[in-house]
Image (cartoon, rainbow, N blue to C red; front, side):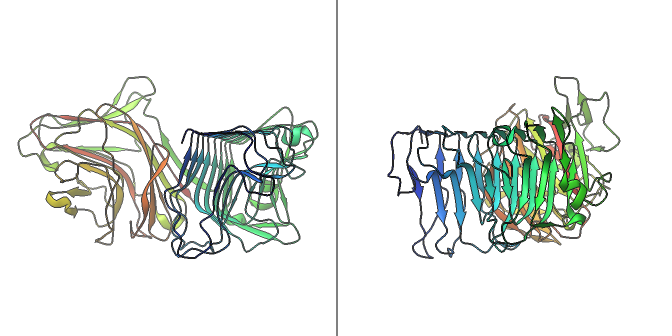
Length: 488
């Protein structure tokens, strides 16, 4: 944290920051945080390198965070600014690694073969909010080996400025469950490339499945004719999504849509977004309240950016039946449809004597707190299938708790190590695979470990927000927005 590196590492060495616990399969690489550093000149092959590529580890890499670093001044003619590589054989059963590469600024200083990043053999990797200026193409996977797979990767809200090679700003090889969201790709290869980004193989045919390319901006370079290219790469038309992308400065051919999406006019993703800016609650939602007269049905609050407020009662019974307030959607969502994800931004006015839950549940016919906690942190599941984040002061541990129940079998709960702050918004996201596995993120950072048995795979689920007061004072839970998406 907070180091400055100048003139570091010989040209034959990896680079200023090099983590390689890969001499033995029993080595451990967990919760490595490389944050807020400045690398101002380096001669090695990488600026920041975390790699276990020599051997598959018994306990694979987990909890890597490379965040808010500044990297420039590469003097070697080739290399990578940020490298993350494992030797794991990645599949849908691989435990998510919780990798975050975010908020970094990488500036090439003339070494045109420096990659902004290269991620290989990863699962659950978030590359977001970075700025990459100059250099060659960023890379995901190994274009020379179709069997080297990555899984569950998000490339989101990044700026790619004039970096790239003949294949564009990003070269993508075999990757499943890939989301490329809201990036800006400006004049790849200083305007010389004909392509924005490319799904590519080199002497082999690489393969990807379940790819979403949504909301990106392509600023056309002088020689550019293609936004998304496909070469020596097989994609699955039945699982791909592409919409909301735009081109600035002309028109470009999208080979992903034309060749690999099937009918490009049919959106293959179901999305619900509510910012709660209307005058009354949308018909997408149903409100329920308990018997206490102080309970108020979920109500739109006329404030900047909009919100919906759930008001819990103040009856001495201190139960959901008396003091509860609930807002649920419809049973439209199922993990087996792939890529089920929910994000929500919430705040509560007080963090004493309160129980609140946000996530998915399996019923929409009654007022019900899906899950509660009690003394000794004992969990009680009222729902048969549900997963979400719970805060319940009846527990001994007053922290956010990650919970799940599948077919009446409780998943192992996980405390997040943090409690809400009264009156302060925070953003949670839950991603659920069709293997009953859920991962949780708070304010953009993965929390806990992947939860197995989080919720039934073939159960129709509804989004739900629920709160009740455990005292004789009301509690107010505000929801700024909810966003849900899944494959059709």
